[in-house]
Image 1 (cartoon, rainbow, N blue to C red):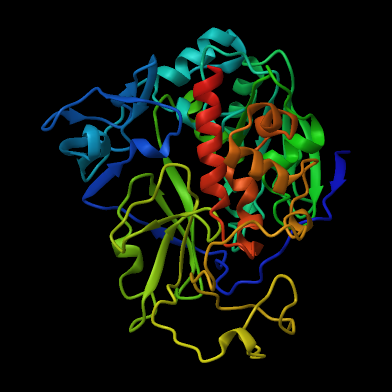
Image 2 (cartoon, rainbow, N blue to C red):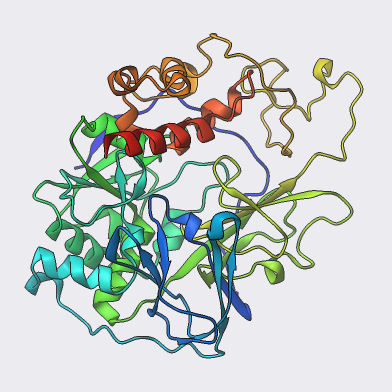
Length: 448
């Protein structure tokens, strides 16, 4: 029987627009865009040029510092554009997709018969190593560093989170193959975290892993919280992290011999008329998903990801590399309230019970409802931060870039997503996720 850890601190944000557990179909687009900025910690160097023909699995670019780390095209077709920004930074690579996807053949492989180096090389050569991330620094894992342990999170607790049972249904064999491959890559253990509500046999009966149940509100589903409660990261140690659907993508490579980056994505949000699940490859343009299916006549916020940590996109934006959720909520810039701060309207929601609470779900918009100011020490972060870390003190040490304090306060364990709830309840309206991201990048540059 799996060990169970009860998470008491946190917050369930009751939003309208949870995805109906129905597969609505497959979404395709004429053009697919891959954005190198999704893959934190790498310096991209192009492996293709405009007018090159590619297959699904053909490298589009690689990491300058680790040339063996390729990033695969999710579709076959022709490279039509390479968009650059300031200092010639690559913003995206655009591929005009074929009607029928052609795949590079990497050959089916039996994981049990492969060595650790052969497993690693197979994932690197196929261009899907980006699915493996590492702590510290929350970056794409450095292939040359051996992880102490590997942590796989099998569920999500973010607002409007997609159902792990639904997403993993039918791909249990790929999930187990992926877990077997990960077990080859560490001399430590592979820890798989699940929710008590999970019924998927691929998770419940997984082999070669240590299964732990986490029960509680968000951020119980964050891998950082799970690491902190199972086996924290100390200075000099490296652990790798993945989500269960990404593990299944790795397993699919070994079972089918191809790079198939198809995700089952939840369409969520209060402004979506018909929620549900859709299959699509990463980089797919989402305008066909929104057309005629969102509220009209108001300003909308389109998000690739969830409302707390997702990335703002345009109506014709694309599915970003790590996302399994697309959300549409009101922007709120067309809302004008007289004495809104003093309102007792049942439409208002407050995490700190500033307003009366109602047993209902809310239609929240993207407004800050306040301006940035100095940090107010009120222990509000502690109420929603279940890690054995002092969040306010850590944020202050990052702002001051005090390396000694940052290390003492647990900087190596955290990622920006771990502070998303703190940012949500923060009366100071600070961009805590951006602060943490900047601190991690500066620390990595200083230490490495």
